[in-house]
Image (cartoon, rainbow, N blue to C red; front, side, top):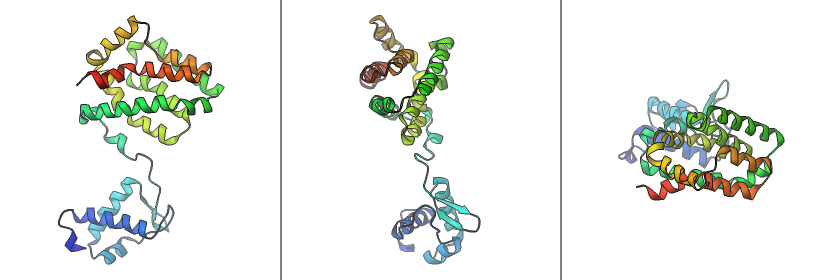
Length: 234
């Protein structure tokens, strides 16, 4: 093992070896792992390096240390840690666009899930969100207010991965808010003149009336400014 460490750090290599150990022994969440000293002896590596590798795996959510059981394998949270580092100032315009494209595909694609799971309770919650946004005024919405409607429809879709993915979209909303006048205002003005702009209140009416196909088309129009941004701005 020591001869193979010329391109990576010891901690990197030990981290990979522990993951390989989990796979090779077909360990599942709840199964115990060797302790720090045992890994150190197995690999011929100092305990300090093993400790660092185990610490990284804890941060990823792959392992936990439990009282009386020692180190055990755990199921990592979906998209673990991504939202903590996704700052729009750290992301290139290309990455922002790719995230925006994923959002468009997902929001149009989850219509079937939404209309399968919709209930009167969800409709009331959406109505409350729309009423609040109308009271605030579209130009006074914070990023969180803007996300609220979309977060709720992701929740209605009933898929935890989709809901977690929505959290990763925060930089896209921040970017859109910060660059509204430069990129999106001209598009919205043109759509508004044609009577083609779709707001949350319009989307809500399609949900309220259980009109899935109408909603799907309306969502596509709602996201039209982002679509045009993807293909009309370098």
